[in-house]
Image 1 (spheres, one colour):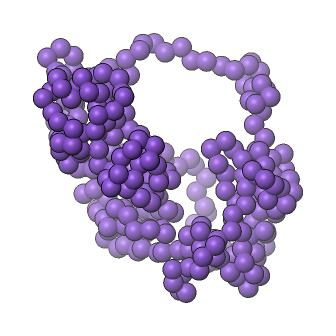
Image 2 (cartoon, rainbow, N blue to C red):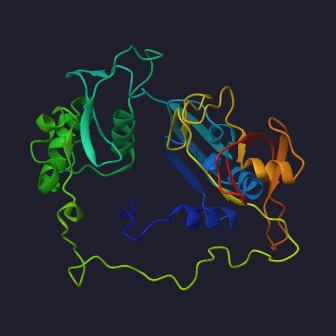
Image 3 (cartoon, rainbow, N blue to C red):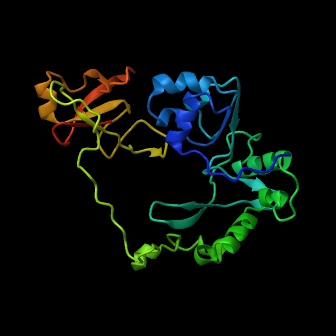
Length: 295
């Protein structure tokens, strides 16, 4: 078996560029909806189908799962809200929130199917098939008792994860160690370093005069976690039954002769010869800066 790669992998942009060049043969996705989340669907979706292998490990069917490569697998697993019972009993997971607090989580309902397994077991079973045995990596123990994984983490990162299994059940969870909260800066100067921008225009290649261009900001809606969408109501903005909307200032709506609720098409201004459009977005009047739209 060849050695595991040690070089840096792709970030999202680099992965997309490599897929477009047919340099990626396989893509294994652990949750999420990568194809829906990235831009340039018109170019990316055909390139995605050209990959030799696509694997989707998901709790909910999504767009990426419906775009198969030459060989494609959809592997449904137990969701976080479902009970996960192994030979060692009911298992618990840990979750880190946006404020770097880690807390425990247990499922509350039976799995959707008795045939579902957890992501943890899937990874461990796969590792046992493709990796050489290593006495320091106890795959069988990890997939039976998730506390064994947390024990390994606490040994590896003791500054943040000491007494991991006990502290994650504290009210609100425990805070990971963030030196910046103590105004400690782990830089060469031991100070916070700021970069001065060379200009205020982030879109230097955008055509100027003669184009009536609106600046688009993309937003995360309610009932959404990263790229996984759970519902179609956005109680934060009072929008119901759809996520296909474009938020516009009332002045921009009136100036373009549009109406609230009207379906419109957005087209990207670009000079690379690629037509980028998205249709079927409903106009919603919203308190947003004139000249800007949100979707």
